[in-house]
Length: 429
Image 1 (tube, helix red, strand yellow):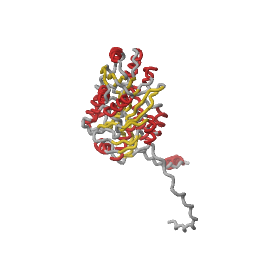
Image 2 (tube, rainbow, N blue to C red; image 1 turned 135 degrees about the vertical axis):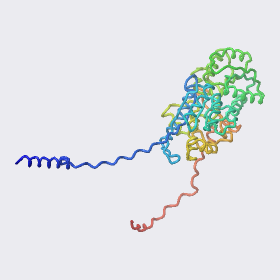
Image 3 (cartoon, rainbow, N blue to C red; image 1 turned 60 degrees about the vertical axis):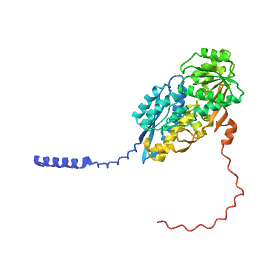
């Protein structure tokens, strides 16, 4: 074979190899899997004291809000035709009134759709002005000072009662115990002073003598000076408006000074923490909460919360409801835009963990309950519920609030008729 023929055959072979890829067939390309729908992130703010003496209460509230967010995300809700994913943005306001507006502006800048907070009235009131200016709905599960909802803001709500409901309730209970002389002290905060004022008004109206009115502050640790003054007045009872971080040491020091008077507190010191701070000195104290106790919250909430975070400290169910109220209003409005869902929030009727929630024109919860507790064996236990000015024993209240059992049928159901022959099946298309 001459050279030209060899060269020709080589070129033909190379062309065949190139054309057929060494005899391998080209694999067909697989279709790409459709991309998962990306959810729209909707931020919800929570603010409360996450550090300091009452951090246990702030963290409890945060956990209630977080549980609501996680449960909503598990449902894969669609609002405005889009899949949404809620994200909790939680901030530490340190129970400091100066931090309230700062945290509120941080939420505004982050474009949160709503805020569950704050815990303390003294922080919530100044923060609420910022939320009002931005048009962001805010629901507190614990701020009880009447001023919060007396400002005329249409975007501010609370899921608990007010101090002008709570104060009279605990004062009425004290008066019912045949108390004749009471000494009153407060921590000079918007919450503590406001509540103490309401207690004083009701006691005086009931003919109970207020023999002393003393002040301390929410960072104090030594109460011997004011307690010595109180001891000199020999009261039958002492009421303190303040939080458990100061209420616990106060009652402990009072017993050390030999003060035997009944001690009573508002919701800020109506916690099991009192027993940890005061030991045996806390036994028998009386206190109130602006709402039903956690034990009366729905079983679904309590089971879910305990499995994830342990026992409820106090107001977690009310912050859980606060978040769920906003989400329910968004669903009704089919929008996460605060301006669009706010009107739905104002007129909502929602069955929450703490019962049916509706708001009046001020943003206060309608028919809010106030619960009276005593501390027994290191735990606060409910003993009475006050609603609409009427008081019921706690067990009696639960029975009255329980749904009526379904009525039995008047006559036994008729026996089933003999089945007739089945109709002929329609021909399949």
